[in-house]
Length: 491
Image 1 (cartoon, helix red, strand yellow):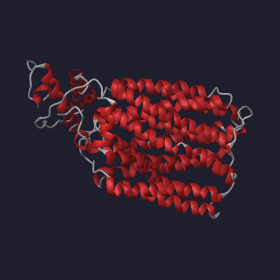
Image 2 (cartoon, helix red, strand yellow):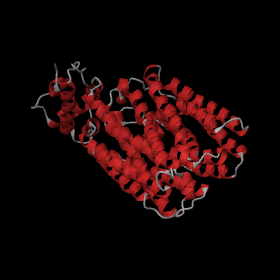
Image 3 (cartoon, rainbow, N blue to C red):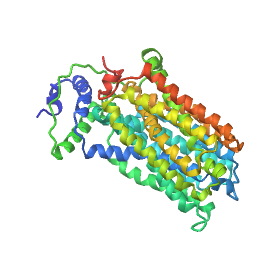
Image 4 (tube, rainbow, N blue to C red):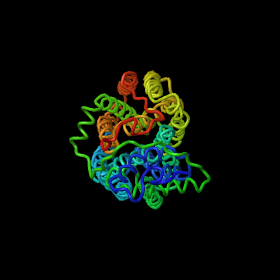
């Protein structure tokens, strides 16, 4: 079995520059040939937990909306709740951009801990807020930590998972957001029940619980290595070699036999950083169609999700007279539909292909939301049937939203991957950040027809994204990342 430098056709006596170039060039094939192992499960659990945290945060914010409005300390209006939720999203935008830029410069692993640390402090701080400014500030900082996580985590997952499983893995991990949503829903049922605990204390404990979970994640992430791809292109090829050899040794120890590597004829020129000029050249000159495409996907799913989910509790309480303490019961089936979508449809993104599945999931999401909106406006739904309609709609929408992150992560060069993810996440989220506030105002109006207009707008965005995919979709299934988008450091 060929191993390490022997597989690369060079020896210890070869010049260090040549060794570095061979190591960097061979890394994609070495990572993509790996069979699924316990190492990959570690990556999925330790890094994918980010989406569980985000789901926890967003769902808590939605579930406790009624408690925040009834709080004797805060006394929020519906628009105040929407403003605070928008602050979370704006924070996520800023965090994604800033930490995404740092991720490409400092590496994936350092940012795992930095962004999670910010999240821990801010979500714990939310539990001790006393008015709208303090609450909004903590939500802004919490969002910044989660936004930064998206860039670092999505980059690492893309670069550590074999190409043949990349689509399904990415979709399932992004779909795990709804595991967090389900956990938060279950917790809110207890924490907002006045028979169990004072709701004023309960909503504070709900936010503080996220920080407790985050502490355990910090410990788990110690065992996840830096991305070898990133190391090899940043003058750390020897370290990359140690990491990949360690991964291969762990896989062999499980009884797997690794196939021989194909010949390598690519020359790699390592770099310390990538200039913003190179980033914008890649975005607007090398890949302008992909840039437009990713922006459309991100913006459509962001508005779609933010409009519905951040105002979910207010819809139930204002139009269906559901007590705020019971909102969690209605979020559980909604969360189940969101988890099942990527889980059941995810493999088709690797087999049937990216383009047809994105068209299907975005298109179905738009059609189903429009139909639900008309049924709601006509007064044909109850709280239960409204929840069932949303569950079916978001079975497809969850896979669509996850596909947007997958597309942004795999369609641009390695050296700018984290920043590219951040840019599209930020732009999409910024466009969608007004949705909770706007829908809060629409719900506050008490008019079903006004709310319907918002639903139809969101549905129209999803249908537009499906149409754009017909012309600009990229067939990235089962291809190495370096084939989908050639690294800037490859000659």
